[in-house]
Image (tube, rainbow over all chains, first blue to last red; front, side):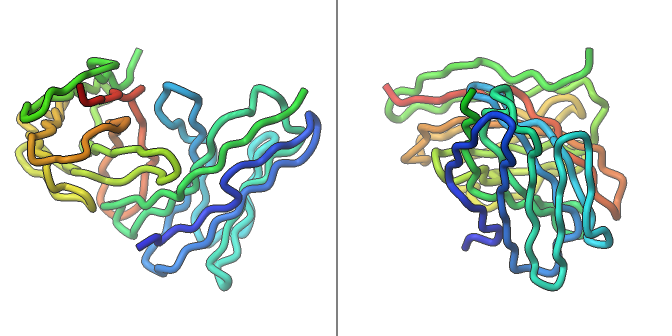
Length: 112
Length: 115
């Protein structure tokens, strides 16, 4: 059962463009929504995270938009750079922090 | 420099053999986790532990076992009962403060293959 659905599976963006990755969840028991960035051969690293009482969070070129009523959230990468080429995972953590469910991942390639 | 160390980076298993993957953290985190990563499937939780001498099954625990004898260490054994063990295994840790959530910090993984 896929509780966090992530799209697209892969994404190619021109340097300087905007990368957008979308996620949808089903369970209302989630209350923490992190995004992780993973480079080949490495473990994921936290990029940015949001809690459901906030509709948007921005850190540098990275922005999370959160729509609680639609149970959707998205990652926007502004001014995308070749160094942003990586796999991105959205995730949702249950209230109390016992378990985190990950999306299937999006492979982003930024063309120079 | 604080972090999570996983070893070995690459591991090969023969048929019918148990293998143990090491995970050590010096972040003083209470909670530790093991995930399996397969292409196109994201990360799936195998086991997690909130405190020493206690651990819980995740979504795909069959064929795996863990122990948590020390706060810093959370080794994973892939037993011969796990029929499809080829995958990238990731260990993570986080602060456990009760209600409220903290991000997980990951090691750089162990890639396990079948000989």
